[in-house]
Image 1 (tube, one colour):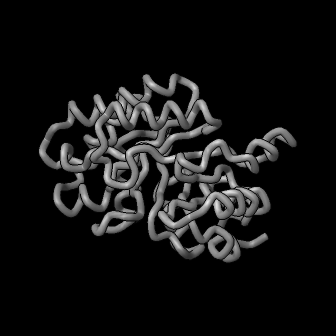
Image 2 (tube, rainbow, N blue to C red):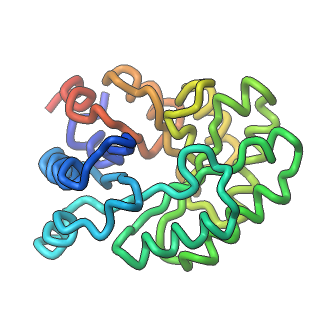
Length: 230
């Protein structure tokens, strides 16, 4: 089993509740800093985040700032997603987690899924990390493993740095080890896989890592990390 600090270095500490305030976002960043996480993932309206700016000026070990785009439905016009992502990067985000239009994928419109990702990548430039949320549980429920595989491949072709399982808001569910394994096989060793959605215990987190995830999206980060040895 990995140590607490090793797992923390894989975590995007997440606050995406609609009712979250700017004070809550600053507190989430402070908690992420205290826990030693890799990044803190917030709604784009929370930027620029003063707490993040202050922490990052203090040293290189501060968490990265991550935001979502087209969240949570993915039904936003591609140009809206791109503008939202570009503005977030201009306001200090290092990473963007965008949501695909799952309906397009399920309808076989995979070229449009690719175009969606590519447009966001072109909007933010080459440097920021781009994670593409594919809603793996929905693709597996209403499609199949081949569809999930192809969506991941198209996302990488469009410029994804990571493919990500879930928003955590879709009724089909969040991350599963089976989905992570399919996604890891689809993208190979060079592209990241982020497991997110419903990971609430150390055992679940370890299962995702064992399946091939190299980033975890957690909202209850402190409780999950408490289950790992020092």
